Image 1 (cartoon, rainbow, N blue to C red):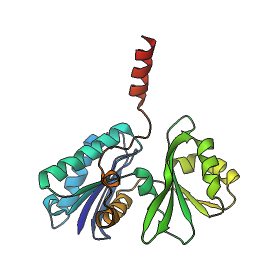
Image 2: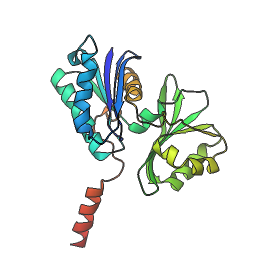
Image 3: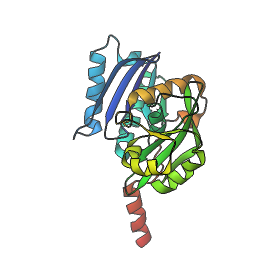
Length: 236
């Protein structure tokens, strides 16, 4: 089964093409251009180097957030267009879940994905590995970093691997709160289309939840534009 995966939820625009779990092609770019300018040329470049076409893809996947509001919309819209045009299945994967798949699984370890949401706020999710996939423990969080770490402390009897932009930004705070933890490497902290693909492939064969498979964006909090509009309406 061939899978095309894209991740536009962060400042990195990433694509990957897999045949089952074998990576056939991977590319990423982070520059001053917007993802809307980068994404389609990257996809064209990928298929120019392969001996099959976009229509030969069996499964489309993308990160559906949380992360950049604009980036998420671009990625979801692109995958929805491919799904509708080629009439093939498509799956949206949380960017927090995708980050967990950046980490090589070890028995007994938990993975905590943390994405910086500015002003000491973060998006976070805690995952455990079992039977070739990561499963979310409890629910996704959007809160101040200190509040999130207080919740995660309940699981500190396990060794926890922290990953993501928030893990890097708050590394010292995490290490001061957790004795039995590991911080991901710089490369592992980056959003990755290949990890989104791994999660999507598993769910394609093993998950029937419409909510989990949905391509609806997962924002976890309101955009600054929505907050500003609500404030203006309230003031009036």
